[in-house]
Length: 311
Image 1 (cartoon, rainbow, N blue to C red):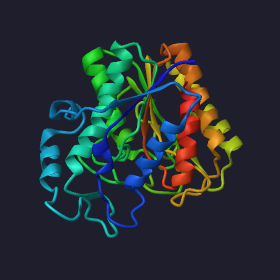
Image 2 (cartoon, one colour):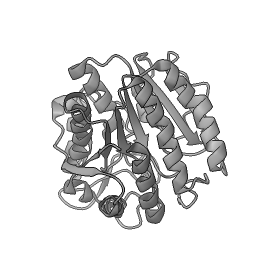
Image 3 (cartoon, rainbow, N blue to C red):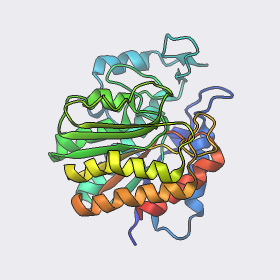
């Protein structure tokens, strides 16, 4: 029974999106409280560092970062999107939260490559998998999992990395960043049609992108069967050296932003399947990043099952 390292930081609780916004600080609050209450998993909580501009620029150009951070208001909220009903906001504390969320991923991959850690969970916000190279959207500003992958390549010369995304929304940002990079496998299972509208099966990159769009109402058994046949079988063939997860918990039946019918126990099964592959090919190395999940009860229960699957 292994230890699960948790990277987080109080700065991630300071990101404000205004009243009635689904991506709220209470999401991380219930996750951290749930982690503290677990008595059957050996966890160690560590503080996430601030990512440096040099690290973030492995994915996002420094000019884009400057433009993004220059929009941060002295008070109140500003949107980074021009579309009607835009809901991706910056607040005065945004920079610290964004850089802590990204820094958690850097510290996490360092811990698996240098310190012998096997399973790491980044309990952070804002999420990241919708952030494209030069476009913030979907509550996301910096693509945390993508920066971690590029850091693994740049600092540790890792040749094959799998990014598995089981958030109910397709990770358009992660797909865009790695669409032509055969050293990164990106596999996503997600409800379709649903925001952001990408992630069709025909979107295959250079043979490294595997999308599994699923219909509203999909149950846990069907979800897992599709996940294994469309995503995990391809990850197994790829034989990654490290597995990174975009772990969204919004496919839970209670989630207000989607229509998939998973239960908390399904996240245990999903995670165990991934860990089995990691044990075969990746020396057990799995780094997981909190993405979506907008019902507080469902989120807390599902994260606990995810961590049980990681141990």
